[in-house]
Image (cartoon, rainbow, N blue to C red; front, side):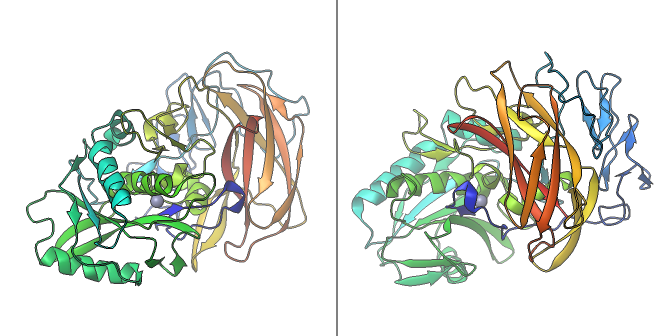
Length: 453
Ligand SMILES: [Zn+2]
């Protein structure tokens, strides 16, 4: 799903995916699960991990910090909660410097991606001809672009092919909900729509005169576009819905249309069916998943530089999450802007904490701080190449809390200390989310979510 929000309006995502719980699991183990299924503390080079994930073996050049094998100079014990007093670590010439691992999208059990997605653009008779032509042209170009390869190849998705556009003879409904769209689409597929097309993605655009809703949300207010799955006679089909929204956030109606479609095409290809494919974030990064969502488009949609116009597409598209770039310490949202030096400040989460989401209870790495009391966290600064010093700050996203830093201007390799004092928790999660920002200026910033309970 594709939200239309600015960062300051981040809300709890409605698309959380519960993760599987075998014997040694996130529900039963705070360290890591070894190959025999036993729970280990998770703080050894030979058995590193956190939150009930499989233990990994770090190599001799690494440290096991907060359950992650970190490259580089190491030597930083997980002493979050104490304040060294000496300020930062003085920087590092190893790029990227040590930092807690970024999220990885995980392939859920039994899920498959679309190896050869075939987009079927579908429009209604009463839609504006110019918009329909523009959308058809966008679809004809996006799947064979270098942009598409950059965002999907690592997940096993090949070039996308545009099928002949379907211009329906019927008018669009005045009002329709996602469940009704599913019923309508199943009926169309049953009647021959997409017959013979392998790995189809049915891509419907609706005219501005249609009032659309998705899971109770009115399209174009908080939801820009979405994708889903339908089943007919045991076969799974992927679809995407693009409402025609009025201009917003400095983007035109057609820019919103194509940026929404690029997000949904990426997700409908990497997480097309039941069972879900790349539809969850790894356990240590529950805060990212709950704040942002569970798929490659969601994890990047809030960024200030999320959208751009690739020359070989010619329309506005969205950057999406790359596991490979995230693991390498580069900008996880690809393709990275030309010439960008990526930098961020990442808090080290010392605890496993409880939270609730959509009525379900769970645990995730976070920081345990009773209301009205304080704890001091380590925050590791890194960049993927030399850059000018950057400013760090923190901001509550839900609930409220006070922050105090020992230093706020630093560089790759520095370790700062952030004292957090929560004053209210939000009712939905039982705790409170905050974001750590790293910024050169208002035009260049990156941020990392975290959770307090
Ligand atoms: Zn999405």
